[in-house]
Length: 208
Image 1 (cartoon, rainbow, N blue to C red):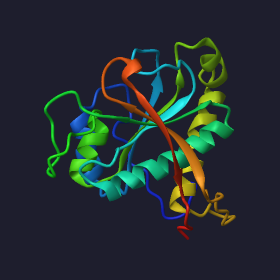
Image 2 (cartoon, rainbow, N blue to C red; image 1 turned 180 degrees about the vertical axis):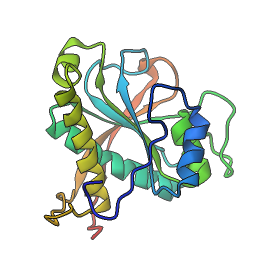
Image 3 (tube, rainbow, N blue to C red; image 1 turned 45 degrees about the horizontal axis):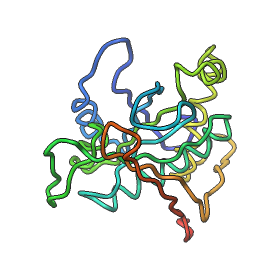
Image 4 (spheres, one colour; image 1 turned 180 degrees about the horizontal axis):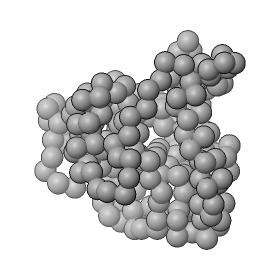
């Protein structure tokens, strides 16, 4: 809210659970332009790295235009997290392993926030900032409130950059990405050995 014409709504403001589907519903009820779910990562079997940041975005099934927004927004946030010192592990797409389909007959995205946002017609992403169980990541990004604030500010700058927001008072606008190459990981199972990888170039034409 340090930027002009921005209102932030929280899906929760305390230590209590909110069902995943209810988070999307709240975003829709609030009339939000985007839903951003903020997370911190931990080691698991689905990826072959154990540090750094990634953004879980819609891969294009169900609503390609909306998916493009999630991917481009992810690029901006990843760029700012990278500037803050987190290793950029790129965008992540994951296909459902259940019999779940969008209205066009394509398999859904795996993660509830992403999937239900596509169904609701709102861009929805998950930002994984760094790994809590990686000692180097923990010390660099989670060890104290000042370090956590640095991640939050990176998120804000990334969002402001994508939406071309002006800073209150100064009128400052974050830099625009052009011809930006981002790594993409596609996950189809619980085993990272089944993953496929590619690079995609975004912002080949000016948006402004």
